[in-house]
Amino acid sequence: MLAGRKRTIVAAVLALLLGVGAAGARRAGYLGGLKTAPAVVVASAPVFEIRDTLRASETVSQLFERRGVNGVDWAAVARAVKNFRADRLRSGLIFAFRQRHGEPAPHAVAVRTSHDTRLWMRRAAEGWAASLERIPWRVEWVAASGTIRSSLYDAMDEAVGDDVLPREERVQLVWGLSEVYDWVVDFSRDLQDGDRFRVVAERLVSIEGEVRYGRVLAARLDLSGRRLYAFGFDQRGRTEFYDAEGRSMKRDFLRTPLEFKRIASGFSRSRFHPILRSRRPHLGIDFGAAYGAPVRSVGGGTVTAAGRMGSYGNMVEIRHNPRTTTRYAHLSRLGPGISLGARVAQGATVGYVGASGLATSPHLHYELRIGGNAVNPRRRFATGSGAPLPGAQRPAFEQEKARLRALLEPETTELRQAT
Image 1 (cartoon, helix red, strand yellow):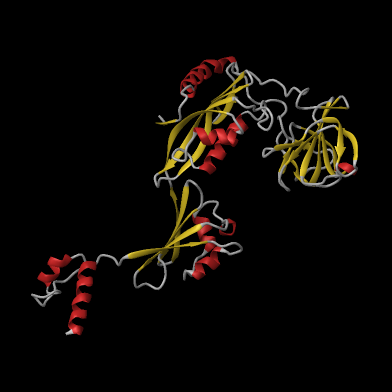
Image 2: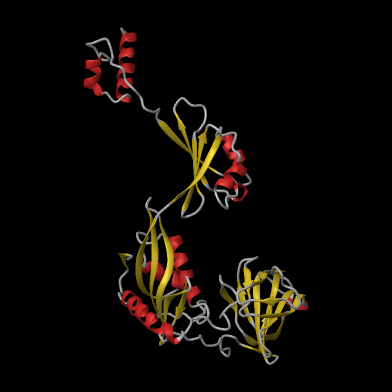
């Protein structure tokens, strides 16, 4: 009797899996009644998915072997998918292995290779076929404003919630804003308690519900009585930023030599040196930063010194014009191509933060010299003026500025579908 009950339970489970239901099972004879079951055609076996992560120091081939996937011709995959390199996939990527019940190995593998693409590999008679799936993103506008109390990060957190942008994407928005004003504002010093910001930016929403930061469209900073507008305007396929008068936000010199920065020690004619244990001039600015952080040239010019320079440690000096030079000291190493006489562009990496020379911890010592004399770049150095838009482009710019300014004014954060 017990064996018969077990057979009945098994039959009921089979009936449910095949989709005939309890009533259908009785009519078919699974749960009593008729003893002959009608023929059932199963179009395809159920598929299950296993997700696995590419581990540190593991190759993609090793991951595939762990999951029972063999016979992949990676050279053929690279030919089928432009710019694909299996050896350049970063650890932490999640691969989805799809496998049919009853089969010994997966028949398809998918991995997200970028924000916009997913690589698919499907088993075929001749091996594995590869293709890219384009992931569509919907563009929306985020308009936000806030007051600086402790930092721009905190102000942005208050103005933009997690439901609008995840925290890591809000950080990207802050850096996007700082890049727009890179030539005119030092975000480590110029922002004061009570200053305000407004920004209109894109957020991107994928068909799968992911949300990420896109780009800044327009912004306004109210800094100690100064009002600084920035409006994005398309120039030959790329967005450039201009102020309210149509002058470029770009200048001859960047405000700071580090993107990720905090002031550690200011310019001083007399400062107590922690190693020499005496007071001496400190004719530059120290930027505290992580060891190995890239250091950029604030302007274009020619390298006039590169290498070990006494108490400076590893140092690079660049002449920008007949009167102006900058120095970057205590570097851990020099940047690519940096040598005596080399030409560098504005923003080029001249070296990496270190603690060489007379330094107690990793930081960048930055000097500005005009006419051979060290000056404080915070107070006495003009970064230049932005080039105005050509007259023929002014009508289009004024129209775009009016559109962006209308989006920039609301005090509350809101979303709109982009048109």
